[in-house]
Image (cartoon, rainbow, N blue to C red; front, side):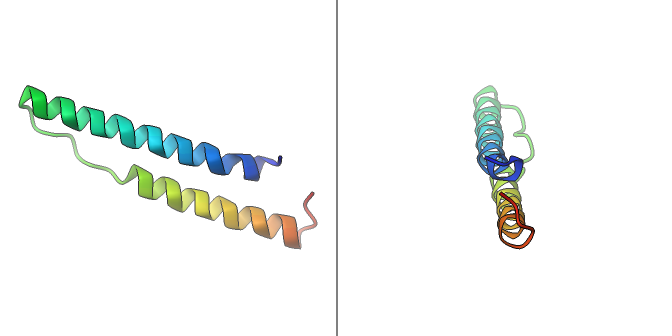
Length: 67
C-alpha cells in the first residue's frame, strides 16, 4: 500500500481520537462546573483531509502511472 493510501485511515483515526478527547474534556468541564473549552471541528477537518488525500491518491494512481 502506498503512503497516500495508508494515510487516509490514519487521518480519519486521528480525527476520531481528537473528537473523542474533546468530548471527554467537555464532559469533565461540565461535571466540575468550569467553563467548557472551545469546540473545534476535528472530525470535519479529518474528513476533509482524508477526502483531499483520497483525491490525490486517485490522481496519482490513474494519471501519474502510480503502482
